[in-house]
Image (cartoon, rainbow, N blue to C red; front, side, top):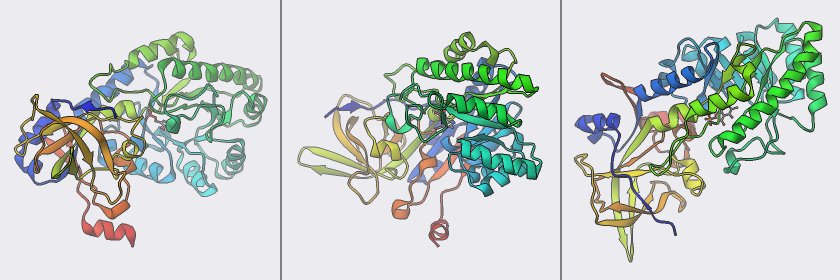
Length: 425
Ligand SMILES: Cc1ncc(COP(=O)(O)O)c(C=O)c1O
């Protein structure tokens, strides 16, 4: 069994919450976002890609409306994976034209809503293009439409989040359907965009660049066909998928290198030939939040210790169900919020509160001695954690805080018992 060691430090924004004793002591668990860091990540993306780009932040990574609302400015949009996500985006104040709707399962009603509102749509199949064709004429829509291509370049190292293999439920396969793709661009006047997304985390920079390059070449071909008719193909949506580091032992990749490699391979994405759209989620949010949970109990058995905490498979769903692919550093604080460091470490199982044996977020991790009433900090939980919250055992979603330069705000209040009743009624 691999034994991992905890991280003996916490970030400055989290320290502010720990120092505010009231917030810290009154909550069995908290999720805390660093609002300044999110701003930095967005600025970096804007700096690396051309000025005319629309950076559609993937709502699925972190759908907190109060968090999305504060990112709403020129050049920033949202990527929605469902009609309710489109709705959240509109409620967060984004213009319809800055929201991109991607889903392999859009109903006619979903499309009607999106096309009436003027939301951008990436069709996932030829069948969806046919549906759009009928609606588009009836509704006289202003929506900009693209077609999702699966570049079929192979999977990354996480099967469950790889969607660019030979067989994928997403998009139209580039190799097998090449002719039909070109025909579609020759058929639909309103089809002005092309889209790809090959996976989230686990994709190397080379894989990401190769996939974009392949679709870029296909777009150049489709453009030739359209130009004959005087039609445009001027929107290139390159998707998200830029990976982050989840461990102090891993160097974080730099998105500037990615952008530079793309510019070299696909200059038209950077010289204004296309309106470029990105759909980053994990890169923007993952490293910008931590969770704190009180240790409710420490169970001591023959030669193992188990720390029972308030966040488990309900919050870290991927980690609990697929531990080999997902890691989060952990730090121990004492009951006053002071860092516990030291050489006297012991192997701990860290288990959540849910009623099944797999509700474990670390099987064996070397941590300083933990006592009931201490706190565990779980790092890098800003993406695909709360958004994947599981209702199993009906536990209440914790308070989510945002730490700004000057103050700490509540992004979402802890769910009440009434909220849970409403959910299940
Ligand atoms: C279509 C699409 N775009 C963007 C993203 C965001 O990916 P990431 O958060 O890895 O940037 C996803 C995530 O799976 C996706 O499915």
